[in-house]
Image (cartoon, rainbow, N blue to C red; front, side):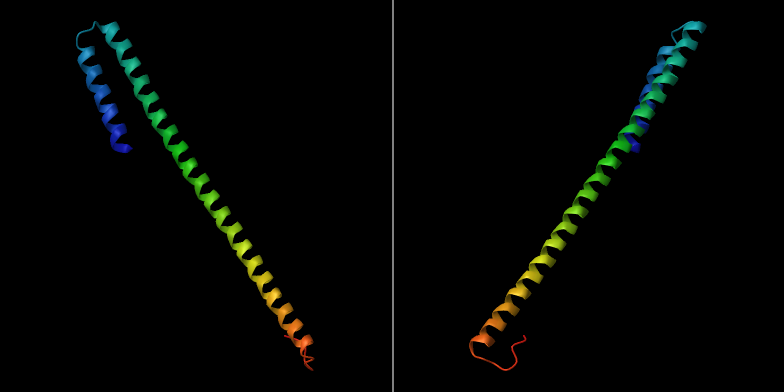
Length: 104
């Protein structure tokens, strides 16, 4: 983005310089002021775009992180449920065979 910004500013400056040479003093001053404002506006637009891109990337990263956290919690819950189901089945089998120790 810096290259594009520098290229835009340079192009605007060259156009302004060529245009200013054909003007009177008052026209030159007005053209220079307009050029300065245009350059400043262009720089501000690039800064704003960069901020928006950065914010979008941050939001995407947060979303991915939240999704991964949710998936981790769901996997943990599923693991606990599977372990409990296995333990219940083991205890049921031990009850069926009348084992002395029915804990699993």
